[in-house]
Image (cartoon, rainbow, N blue to C red; front, side):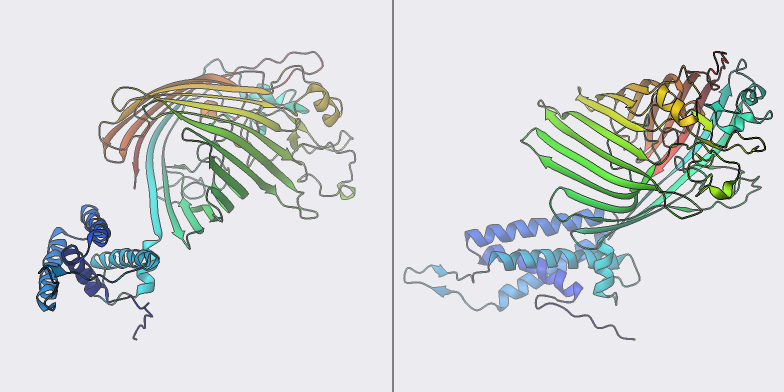
Length: 569
């Protein structure tokens, strides 16, 4: 089957185009006047640099490039030999006549030449090769496709304190109010025994430039669908978290989005995409992606200052009568970026408000659930997405015979977050990066909780969280021998943030914890590095809050060591 390719008036077959292009660039400076010679020299340098880059990246071989240059040289010499004798003026000097080429035409020619050269070099590594049968449409699409990914192997040791409160104690008094996940009501739950596991995380992303203004993206990753904060796959657990015996892993769609850039600096995104907000894992877990709609804008203010803003609406559950009610997150952030000094120093600061709607628990008032619209799921904070730490209450009615226990959030969440990062460039390649993050929940309050829960009082709990961190070394590990080390401290109150989306590693995930983190990274080859991280966490407030003036103190301490081998491409 023949493939018909429609070409513009400037189009040529790829091989011939490249050879004639270089031939013209070699002959051009000998025929042109000063201005035209300068333009041709610039174009010649661009094409030669492009070819050298393609050779360096392995798209084409040096022999192929040298053969192209020899063919082009011969074509240039032939072109000069066939040229008619130049006109001679009265003074005996040669007259050089150069036709005028408008700038718009020159720009169009440069863009087409670059696209054709890239298309031809891609063919060199595939079935088409130089002068092959690959269609122009396929070649053009390939030039706009970006593929990237990473794989991480992890060994993890989790040591739980021998003095931790046993799981059996949480079942007492947990009938009404708790800060623990309901798994702690199980007397067989583990709060004292150590855990060891090996894990793998693999991600493969595709990003396609549909036009200059439209980008589409898709990322596949390991990890289950039981929680939003982790893409880790535990070895020997299989595709559905059961004993594996070499069972295969499942892949999930971690990103699927379309992004528009109608104006310079403005980006509109829809679907499932990377976190559009500046922040730390105090509020948002590192592997968390957002789904919904977002807009981001960056604007230079002067040579050193620039401003940025992001806003978005993200549905957490959709409205379906008898099944679920609408829950959502509305977020807005604004900040500045200051580049200062003679070295690449930078200070970046942002303030954000993350406001959740419809996620608070609603106390039931009747035993006949048929009279309650959208029963249970309308206000339950399910175990499938919560981690640990938020204050929960039993949303079922207190009427005799109502023995079910479903947990809802005792507090609403409207999080005000202040984040800053100072990057100081020191001698050589070293940087000192200082990061701070402070968050408070504006919707937390004992009186609000009392009204929402039907009279339950909470005398402790916290609406405040903060993190400080210092990192020294190379800011990014890209080459062999690159390294950095860091130390950080955090204290995250029980209801400072929604525990579903914060770090899933520190303190076994969630809120209501405090402690230190030590970490280091070392590059062993290009884009390949080793990481080590140690986290020590302690409980802030009792997992079973004080009820009726009776204190129920609990203890939960966790030390976690993670050793990683990372590779990205």
